[in-house]
Image (cartoon, rainbow over all chains, first blue to last red; front, top):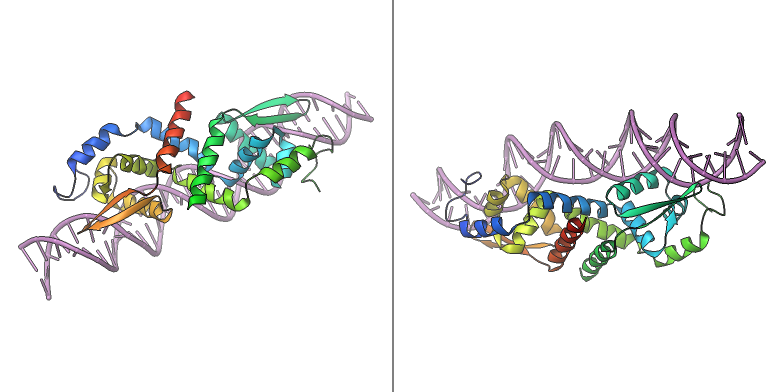
Length: 117
Length: 117
DNA sequence: ATTATATATGAACAATTGCTCATATATTTA
DNA sequence: TAAATATATGAGCAATTGTTCATATATAAT
């Protein structure tokens, strides 16, 4: 029943049963980990942080972050696929803005944690 | 002054200046992205989720997640290094628990976001 | 219509990451 | 003291990821 060795009296069956019952489902864990994968990259985090302040086109973001259009565009695709940003095409330009107000909260809590140390 | 091409009237200097002034520092972005890197892995997320319910030893966690002691131990080291969990040695066993109440908030907001879809 | 511009995207490559396996350390038990 | 047990950790490997480069698409301007 148990994985690998470990004696009966070291494995706490009651705690394990309780945790098993209360823990998040595998599907949910998968989706949440995917969400936080977005926030785990500096470039994407900087893009989201910038969009928190103002709607911006790809050109603006490249200029602001001092990175190529291509890499910004690739990361914006990730953000689009995760439905965290929305795109509005105006002429040749595409303007991006945040789609969700959880984004601000997530960044804020991260900053709070880091600052408390 | 601008990165790559892009005409003057497409780059929004005012927006860029404003964003530049208000954006988080590079250091902070780095630290926050590192924090969220922890939550971007399913195994670590499951460990944190389990510890949210109960203090557990390495053996318990391996049993609960059906993974080897080694991989759990490796991930616990990451969590220790990031100061998200604390370890208490009792005999041969080491009991882990959460060090921070931000962890619960971070998981909750992630779940909220995913559920709203 | 042709050229220029803004963005998107596929392929390739280097860097990072999470697991496994082997081994080390620490503590308890015989 | 020797053997067993719980955990930790280094090395190696496969998988994933972020960037660059080349190219494609869409719109605007000439």
